[in-house]
Image 1: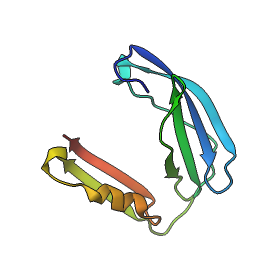
Image 2: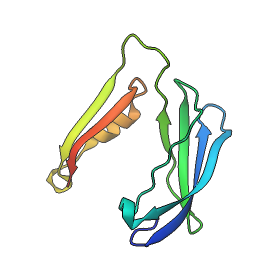
Image 3: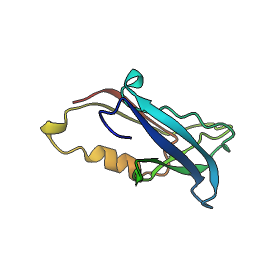
Image 4: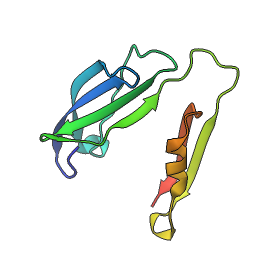
Length: 114
């Protein structure tokens, strides 16, 4: 979404990763009331399924993101946790390492990213 705009319109597109069919699409607005971010809740997604998503605003598309829904039942889950990163203090390849892992069911980012 556009930074600095009072209200920036945008389209949202969710797709299954394994068979790229559209499962949800819609329009939303980024506004100052929500720090120029959008919050999207998509219902009816299958458990333990990988999806991709993207945003579009002013005919420009975002990079494609990906997420996986939690399994319906699990005896154990793998979590990734990161906290308090100071961008100008070094390289943060931990984020890249987390993104490459397929065995994590949840990633929590705690604290500040300065």
